[in-house]
Length: 370
Length: 255
Image 1 (cartoon, rainbow over the protein chains, first blue to last red):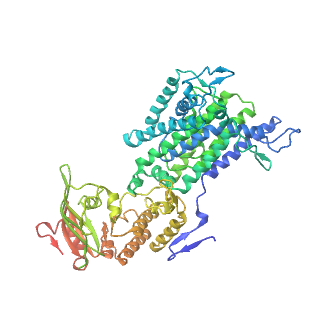
Image 2: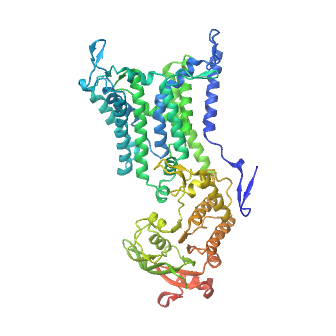
Image 3: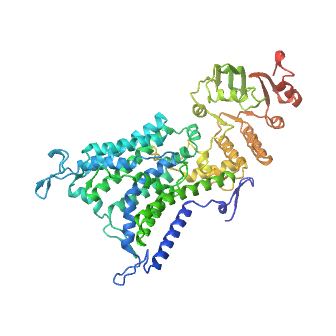
C-alpha cells in the first residue's frame, strides 16, 4: 500500500512519508565507530570484535564483549533515569553523589559480624545491624535514593528553581552525606548474600548461538530495566505525559496534566535508579567509599545525549540511550584495544559529547527552518 | 428561540487602569454561530479570555448552560464543555497527531495510575476519523507535528476542538496565519460544527468569512459591545461603520 486515502479525498496517509526514527542514526554511528576500531585493530594485526586465537572456538572476542557490557551496565542504569529527566526538560546532576550516599548507607546494613574469625573492623553499627537478611540493605538503599529523587522533584516542581540548581544542591549535599556517614572511612565486608548480588550470574552463562551472555548480574539488571522503561515510556500514560511536558509544558498543563506531580515522579524514579546502581556497585566492589560515583552523572548525561536525547526536552528515547551507552563503551574499549593512553580517551570523550549536542542543535535548526 | 447556552452580564476586565472590557452583555443560543469583530484592542480576545477563565474577570457574571460559573482556569472551562482554539497553539510539537488530539484525555487498555496502558490503536483510528470529517490533509499522522506546516498544525488544533466539541466552541482568529486552501478547510470544519448544532463564537478580522459562516455579528469597540446584528439585517459597510465608530456610540444597535 503506497498510499491510502481516507474520507473525502482529504486525508492522505503515505507510509513513505514517515520520518525515520532518530535511533537509526545513532545505530549507524555505533556501527561506523565499531568499523573504525576494527580497521585500526586490523592494522595492528589484531581484531576489535572477532576472536583471533586459534585455541578458542568462538567467532567473537567474548572477553572484550563481556567487559564492554559490564563497564556501562552500572552507569547505564543511572542513564535510564537521567534520560527520563531530560525528556521532561529537566537535568539531574545529583545522580553520582546519590550513588555515593546510597552506597555508604546501604553497605552499613549489609555488613557481616566476623571477618576471618575476627570482629568486622569496619563495623558502622552494633551487632543488631550485622548479618541482616540481604533484603534489608537493598530496601534501605533504594529508599535512600528515592528520598533524594523526591527532594529533587519537589524542589523543581514547587519552588520553580531551575533543575540545574536544584540538583546541583543535591549533588553537593549528597556527597556531604556520603563523607559524613562514616567520617570518610570506607564501609566494607558485606555478607556473602550481598556480595553475590552483583558478582553472581542470574542467567548462568546462557549462550545465544555464537554469542554468550556476559554472565554478570549488573548487565542483566541493566537490560531488564532498559526493557521495562522502554515499554513504560512507549506504551503508558507516564511516557506520553513525559514527552508532552518536555515538548510544551504550557500545553501539557492546559490539557489537564498535573505537570508538577509528574515531575516529582520522574525525579523520584531517577533517584531510585541511581540507588539500584549504588547497590550493584557496592556489591560488586564488596566495599563502599564516600567518593563512589564521582562524575557518574556526567557520564550518564553523556550516554543520553550521544543517544539522541535532546537537552531541550521532548525528544529521545530509552533505546537511544542504550545505543548511546553502547557507543560510550565501544569508544572506551576501542581506545584500550589500540593501546591509546587513558588521557587521550578522556579528551576524545569530551569532544564526542560536544559533537553530539552540536548535531542535535543542527537537527533542530533544520527543522524550524523547514 | 432555542435555549441560551452562554450569557454574560456586565462582564468587565480592568488591567490596572486600562479598561479592556466594560459591561459586556452577551447572549449565545444553542446551535447559534456568532462572530465577534472589532478593531485591534477592542476587547475581543479579552472577552474570550474571561469566558474561558484564562484570566479572572474584574466583575460581572458568566452563565454557562443555565448555571452561573466561576471557572478557576481554562481546564475547568474545558471540562465543563467549552472547547477553545487559542491564537497561540496549545500543541506539543514532539508528539504525533493522535497524541496531540488525545492529550490529557487518553484512551486506555487498562488503568494503572500513571502507568496506565495506552490504547494507541483506537486513538489512531479515531484520529483518522476526526481528520477525515474535517478533510484536513496530513502527510502522516504518526510523525511529530513539529515536521508539519503552520497550516497543518492549526488544522490539528482545530480538528482536536471539533472532535471533542460538546457544548460550546470558541475560535480566536483560527485562520489568521493560514493560506487560502487551509483557510477553506478550517471554514469547512466550522460548517460541520453548524450542521452538528454545536454553538460557536468566532473571533475574526475577515468580514467575508464572517458573513459566510455565522448567524449573528457582535461588534466590540473600545472595550464595549456596540452592536449585535443578525447577518441578514446588515452588510459589510454597516459593520465597518460600527467597528470604526461612525455608527454606534449613543444609539447602539441591538438585534
